[in-house]
Length: 344
Image (cartoon, rainbow, N blue to C red; front, side, top):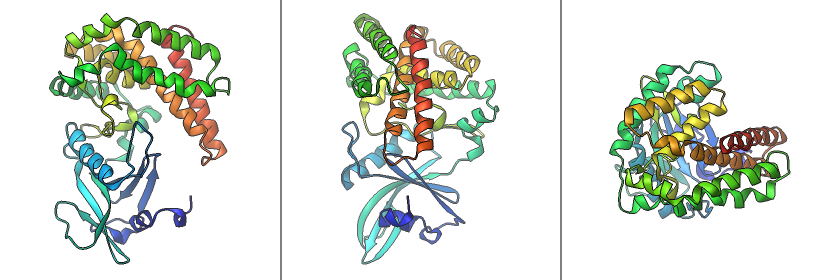
């Protein structure tokens, strides 16, 4: 995408002089929901004005609220990374980037964002996986962070309701509705679709299985997006970018959260590290019941990643190379989901 087609505030933030700190270069990273600016020692994240139903950033007040939630929730695990709320103000033809707590009242606020401390790229977990540098000690460090996080996470009341079979079914079954049209197009076969969906429905029909997890106090205000893309293993583990925009993706069984990372390790061919992660987590937390739900939630997480690959590949804005890569990735995720379902 040409910079000339980007919104004016994005073009402004791509200039090094727009910041009150040194930034030799500014790099823009886009997702389907965010503009992320890497500027010197800091990162600035702004939400796109989109509404996907499960996520609504369509007006400025909603974007501010979600930025505030992002700070509040991510500070549970990364208090020294998530620095504060920033705002972009416009006065005439002039834009300025300010800390929202100390900002002047001059001009009109046109966007809100989150300022983060930049983490070392070479220590991102995904890069450690790619270079073969991920070690058992990294897994052990993650367990030491996650066990107390879940122990202290909010639970009970409304949160428990998200652990019921009918609530979990909302998240699981919508994936099949959303991928039905892609069957037979190169990544998802009819046989895989039928086998995985039948497996998921059979587990969901066993309501007492889910009630047992609720009664054990295992439904928590979790991270919601716990995998290698959201972990940095620097001088200590940083687990960031939790789901802030929809409680039903974050209020879940602890088994669902840790299954995502275990599945991710399996996907990258690191089955031994995946097993160590689960075994260590269960031993440290005492949550032996997690094992009864593990394959179900691994299957769910793998299917979601496959679905995202299909969605990205079908986006007319992506080039052919990215389309093929996402189709290949999706096919791998669906094969993995089928293995968890016992239908591969």
